[in-house]
Length: 85
Image (tube, rainbow, N blue to C red; front, side):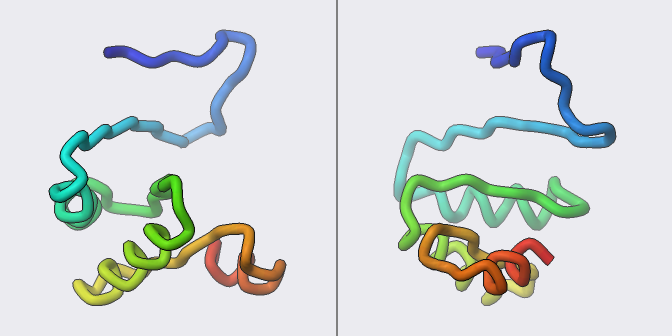
């Protein structure tokens, strides 16, 4: 399936966007860790549906030596900026 945005909207220069859907929930975290460690060589943003999952992924990424941060509505502005840095 190819996903496209409206032609009148442009993405930021140098930004590469990919959509990866992993249907099997049991394999999702392993797939994300594998992609992040082998395929993505610079910064990446991973969107998840739940704050709990964002926190879990942060801890998993930290455990395997990948620098990670979580960003969600329960953080104050200082924490959000730190997560983006």
